Length: 151
Image (cartoon, rainbow, N blue to C red; front, side, top):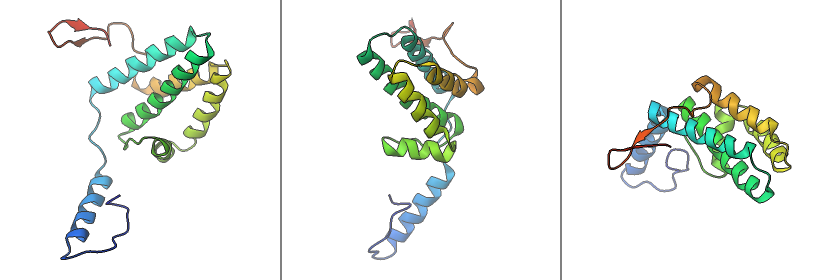
């Protein structure tokens, strides 16, 4: 809002300085995702794909598909070093990063909600491919007490 909004009042130039700084931060982009962060997202997407493949209940499928779509979009943005967003801003950021992908995701989600999950599975696998694909085997993180945990 500070970077792209219209400055209505500026006493002493503080607003102009703040807006210039905000624009600089937006142009610089977010910090790059770490390998661990990307692996965690890959693992989560892999788990959701597995849940979707074994899902016959329409209510459960709705929840899985919604989560899968959101997390796949976020993974693309993280992988591309783009800003994240929520709600409408997630779709807008995704369109900026990968033109045409929001429309493809929308079509795949609609089909998946009707039980035709192939397009959504393929699209998520396409998104995961440049980062190494699905991540399941051998993924672990240190737990709080120092023990290895899955996920």
